[in-house]
Length: 112
Image (cartoon, rainbow, N blue to C red; front, side, top):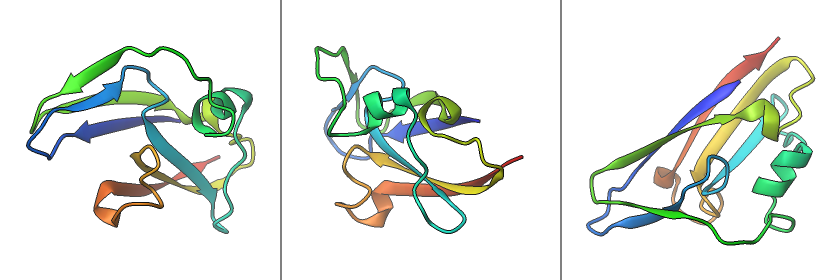
């Protein structure tokens, strides 16, 4: 399951993003009951703020009104071994629970 994420800078100033396919945004996957799906080892390395690897990253600047598009393989980050309907929620890192809903997007998908 590949998710395409498009981050658009709607501010009047440049925004800096980590130039890494899995790191500069928060991704939450939940099952139909609303329970968060367990992270894989790779998912834990990239998405868990308590275990994420700290290091030197290459940053890219996104000018106002411009976008950056990335593809993320959810199966590499989350344990999607159980068939069912899931919801994926994406936002800038630490925005899913800290900023207004306009900074966050959600969609559903089915694993068979």
